Image 1 (cartoon, rainbow, N blue to C red):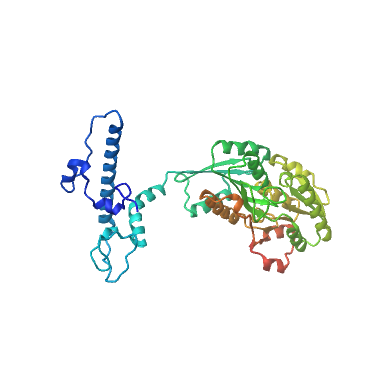
Image 2 (cartoon, one colour):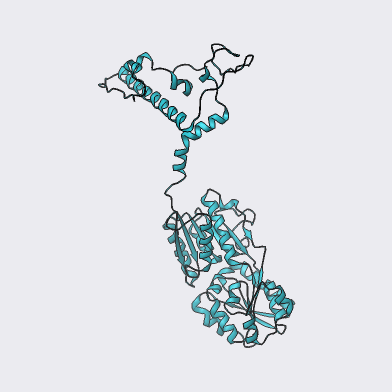
Length: 432
C-alpha cells in the first residue's frame, strides 16, 4: 500500500485538510482561492525543498477545485452507499469498520461506469478541441487532360459527401498535362514540392509520373488499366508501397465483339491508343493479344499510336484506306480528344466503339465499359481512409463489377446501320 499525500487517491486528496506544513492555508475560509505566497529564493537544498512544497500545495488545490467543478457540472458523485450487513469489503477499501459498520466511503473504488463518466466530464472539452483542428488537407490532382474536368468534379463530389469542403478543411492543387504526357513528371514533382498530403491521378501516365516523384506520399489512381502488369501495384489484393486505386478492364475484346455484332461487315479496324498507357514489354504483349482476339472475329487490327493532342491529325492520316471500323483505347488522352475522334469517325463513316460512356455521348456509335464518374467518386473514399490513417498498401485495388453498353442511334442512322434488337435491349442507354 502506498502512503503519503503524493500517492493518495485523488478523491481523498480532494477532501483532506491542508497539512500543518502549509501554515495559514489550513484556516483559510471555504471558497477562497489559495495563492502561494512568494518567498525570497534561498540558495541550497532547503530553498529547493520549499519550492517543491509550494508546487505540491498548488497542485493539490487545483485537483480539489477541478473535482469540485466536475461534481457540480456532471452531477457525478464520488460517494457510494454503505455495504449491507455481511457484505465483504474489497482489499482496496481502507475502513475503520465494515459490513454495515461505519466506513470511509470515499476510499471505496469507483464503479467502472462512474469512472468513465467522471473522466469523460473532465476530458470531453479537451477532446472536442483536439478533434476540431484547423488542419487543411492538401490534395494534389494530376491528369493528362485539363483541370478541372468531369472526373475531378466527381471526385470532389465524393469528398464533399464525406465532409471535405474546399477552403474549409481542404485545399486541392490541380495540375494538367493538357494533352501532353511529357509534362506530367515535372507537374508531379511540383505537387510534391507544394507539400501535398496525397496525390490523385487519372490514368497510367499520370500515375507513373507521380510514382517517379515520390515513394512516401500516398497515391490513389482514379483509374488505370492492368496496374499489376504495369508494375503500379504488387497485387490487387495487397498493393504494397504507397499506391492503390481503381483498375480498368485492360483488354478490348468485349467492345470489339459488340462492334462486330452491330456491324457484321467489319473486317479491318484501327486501334487508337496511347503508348504511355502500354509501356515496354507489357504494351507489346497486349497488342499481340488484341490482334489474336480480333483474328477470331475475322478482323485485322491496325494499331495507331497517339502520344499527344498535337498528333491527332497525324494519327487520322495514318489510317489505311480500307479501314472500316474504329476501336478507341481507354486512355486519358483519348478521353480528352473524344469529340475530335468521334467527329472524324462519323465523317469517315466508320462505326466506332470506345470503352467509356463519354465516347457515345460525344458522337461515337457505341461505348462499353465502366462508369468513370462512379469510379472517381469511389476514389474519394480511399482518400478519406488514407487521411484518417490507413496505408495505401493495405487497401485492395477496386475493380468494377458492372459495365454499361450505350448506343448512339443518331450516329447509327448517319452511318446507315441497323442496330440489332438484342443490343438495344441490353443497352443501359440509347441516345437518340
